[in-house]
Image 1 (tube, rainbow, N blue to C red):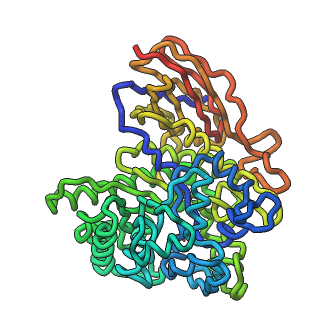
Image 2: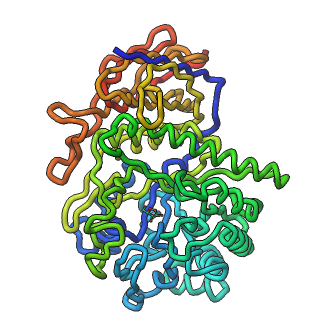
Length: 511
Ligand code: AHR
């Protein structure tokens, strides 16, 4: 049996849990919007065409903020195409995903859908093919109360009250050669600075995210953030990070340890931001918006239906990157959430990409059902239970020896303490493929703990690490009770089966 010892102390706090860490992403891509959140005529759809089965799952997932409308899509998008009478909206070619965009769904629909879902809108502007003017006009259209041409146009289009969108992305992945309107760091840094300035002239209350690197492996990673922030540090509030991971060549051990890479990536971006801050003698702090992250099996990208769907010709909402997630993926996603939470003093926003169908925790079929993928569970539980303050976790664990990352802790953890409810929550993963792990959690500064929740996601009986939820077996992988959790003398004890993710919540007093 492997072992791990975790210590938390009520006084050792990282910072408040940023509620925006539990964000998601809706892009006009594949079937995320069309036949995902929106499908007029579906048996659960309302008069607006919003699918209520997907809406209910979105609420259960607990997403707090949703980025929209892209992604690569936004870099060729005219926001004006998606407002006004639907029958007058233009059909357009979306070059990013080689798709016909009908524009039946646009800004008003997304804002209305978000209100029903109880989620904050995070709106991206197009800095690929467009620039300062379109960006500031969109802010005026969305946020200005009225009495100007653009705000009155919003009112005429049915929205009397301003949308009051606080969070805005200054484009998407403009460091990537695949991006429509790809730029050098210097070109983008100046454009982001000027767009930010003009957008804040319209509404000084908004918060802005500058585009960071599309991944840690980008050739310009580091120098991109440095140059962009050297131009735009004073005008922006966050810099973005994007990361997608997958299992390569059957190396599950390295895959299970990829949060090690995520940790390092975050710490490198923090260093770069702070270096620019010091060199520029800036006072304010820029933080991180990790606004695309997930498991994504990108090695399948060159097959028939991916990446740009060219082989299918120009069609509406084709099936694109509908990855089916298994038990291993769910454990890995649990460790990504741990990494984000552990860095919650600097990562203030994070968006799992995406919400429905496209590399998503929720799947739906046109005219058919919607269901939860395996990765739904760690996200839903953490979004619901990570409250109050993030606690620093000190871990002494047996190691797994990974080909890619060397030694990594067998047991990965994050923890929160909510004074209001008197609850401490632990989010744990056992990365070992073969062995269970005996875990001891020492609770310093707390007294009289009682277990209020203990749930587990692991390989189901008769399944294996590749078991997934499908249309036919929607609940093959879910949460089951984690038996045998005990607390005695300020120490909680539990056993994590091999390849598992768990949440343990304790009601505690303060010592
Ligand atoms: O989420 C899918 C795509 O991944 C997004 O459109 C893009 O920003 C990223 O490369």
